[in-house]
Structures are given as structure tokens and as C-alpha cells.
Length: 516
Image 1 (cartoon, rainbow, N blue to C red):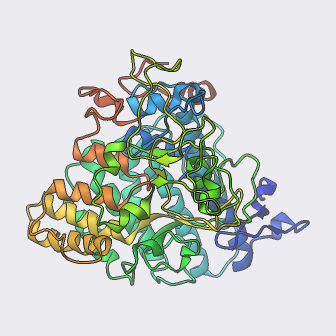
Image 2: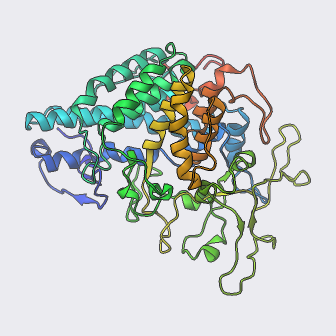
Image 3: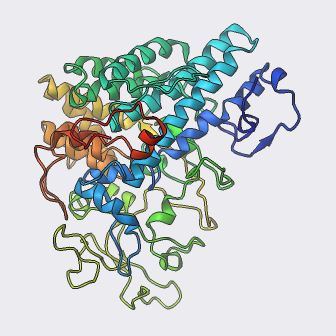
């Protein structure tokens, strides 16, 4: 029997207009491929909660890319959670950790429920096999997310368990993930086309498999698996993906045409706000744009003036690199009618700068941490996904969680780590040529330093900063308003949230954090 109306009243995985099935008998629902598509809507919908500023987007503030500074007047202090994430002082009570834990564990539970539902239905054998593999794949993504962020967590893979689960060690969860992805990849659709866009395909599985092997040593769960990274990437390269000639095609309003998308969070301007599923709309533009930027940009949406880029990250970009303009909103925000520079609420020119200046004479300044308020206009803003001018609350742009460009750079990194730098160089230069529009900036050879840089240039705002910093050994380095914290190895994973333990006293806190 279907449990919960949400399985019957939900957007389908690629058709985001809500479909109401009303009084259909739950016991008889799910016997056709179309009905199975509808039942799977909730598990596909979980992807939309991954890339948001209050969920896993905020956890990336622990890396060297995004920052959510406190603005003059106290805006975006948010009980200090963004300062804690940036300065590596988070605790089990930091709000963002609680939200991320809940979203990921609920997503896994949703997959278990839908898997149980589909498993009990009479369907064509091939359709059923593929559908169950898709569900396992979506669940595998969230298991990967939990391994990466929290390390140790209750790995529950069946529906209807009544006993509170205990923590599964990170190594055991990793072994399960590798086995699961290896088993299902041949059962999934391998086609790369408009009909498979937004689906969990063989390419999706290979992207997660490559990413898991790439981070296995950094996660402390396996010996280096560089050849396995290469093998997974090589297999993905046979599937029909391509690097889009124009980098911006991946982020444009109707970016479903991209042949680079390997795993997708599908969005629509018509996405509803779903109860119990917060942050399911693409609202990245709201979190980052200044309140008055809409006049300069000719859009209807009024931004919330939060998310910015860390200064040193933006300064890595060459002015000739199209990815600078393709990633950040910088410079003067002018009134298109008067041509005058717009003003902030504090009568300051609205000019977005690469630098962010902490105001030491402001009431919010804390000399102990160095954290304090900044002017409203400070900081480069996210403009990687330019929105339709008519949008007010939700953008049409999809977000590609994994792109084919990552296959190139993951393979290049693994090759360099195996001493095969010459092979890696051509892969990096292919990505680099697209960014610069010519070969003038190509490398003659690459090391890990060049690959680390190219990843930063290519994947700004795409939630890889924290993970990459850990793998390349820069996670504990000093940076803007953050002291070096070398030796705090336990912070490579986050604390298990206090609220999670209160709901399940069987949980044991990750090593290094105060025990519950």
C-alpha cells in the first residue's frame, strides 16, 4: 500500500507541473510505466534540495569559494552559522548541519519507500529492473553525500524498519556505495538525449563512482584508487556526452539542451513550495543579488543580498577567461534610465567589488574571530545561472550536479597522481581552451596545482569547493577571515547534529567532537 499522499500528488521527475491523481486506489496504482514515473517523482525531487544556500550550498562555505558575510545592520548573521562554517568552528548545534542531515536522510528514506512500492508492483520485467536501478542510483547519490559530509551515519536501505538504527562506519558505507553503483550501472539507461535528460542514467552512476574513487583516500576509507577513477571516466566517455562549445550553455535559462549534464536537479518557474520539502525551488539568484540590483539587470526579482564569493577565489580568474564574467556579477550597477550608479540602502554606490572589507568600527565586529559586518555592496555575486527577466520567486534554470567537464578533470587528476602528466595536459587544455576561447593560455604540462586551479575556474558555485580543498590538502589553510587550523583533522567531516541524536540516542558523535 502506498504510504503518504505525497507519493500521489507530486511533480514527476522531468515534468514539473503538478499532477493530481486524486482518488486512484493506492493498491492498484503503479502498474503502468506512466504511473511508475509519477510514483518516482518524490525521489527525483530530492535533487532540488541539494544546491541551496541553506543546505549543502552553505556547507560549501567551509571551503574556499562561497561566503555569506554579515551585512551592515546584522543581515545574514543567522545566529553565526555562516561564520562558523567559514571559520571551521561549527558544532553539533549549527543549524545548517541539522538541515542537511535531515534532507539527506529523508531522501534516502523516500528512496526506500518508493523502492518497496515499485518492487511490489507487477510490471514488465525490464521496466521494473531499470526502475529499481534508478531508485537505487538516486539513493546512492544521497549515500555519497552523507559519506562526504558526515562520514558516519545510519545506512538504512529497507523500508519499514521499526528499530532505531545505529551508525554505520564510513568505510562500510563506502563499500556499500561502490558495490551498489557497480551493480546497477549496466541496468540503467545509457542513452544521452533529451528523453533521458533529468533521469538517473548509467552516466550518473559513473560520475558518482568516479567521484567516490577520487575521494576514497581523502575520506580515509580506501587506498588510492586512481586507476579506477580513470576507468570510470573512460567508460563515461563512451556514452555520447560532449563538452558544450559554449560554456554558458550549461547554465542558461533553458539549459536542458546541454549534452554535458550527467546528473540534474530539474527546476521550473512553476515549482510550488512543497510542505515538508523546503528549498525545492531554484532561488540562488534571490540569495545573492543586492536588493536594488533588479533595476540594473532589468529583472523583477528583488534579491536578498547574502551569498558572495571569497575575494581570493575571484582573483584567481584571468580577465581573458570568459568564466570570470560567466560566474560572477561585478562592477557598477547602473540605472538604465538615468545611467547613474544605483545606491544601497546606506547611500553608497552599488558597485560589486572582488574585495570584501570587514568593518572594524561596526558594532558587529568581533576582534576575537575577526568577523564583522561588511557593506551591502561588497563582494562578487553569483551570476552563473542568469534568470529570465520576468522571474520573481523561482528560476527555470536546471542545475547540473555533475557535468561532463568534471569527467575530464577527474581523469586528468588521477593521471597526474599516477605520474602520467602528459596525458592529463591535453584534457586540462581542452577545458581551458573553452574558457579562454583560444589556445593562447594552454599549458605545456600540468601538475596538481594546475588541475586544482582549473577546477576552481570551471566549477565556481557548483558545491565542490570543500571537497576539493580537503583532497588537495588546502582545507585547513588560512584564508579570508579564517585562521589556519592545521591539526583539526576531525573537521574533514561535520559533526552529527544534536537534534539527530535527540531523535535517535543510538547515534554516536564523530570522533573529535564533544560526545553526546
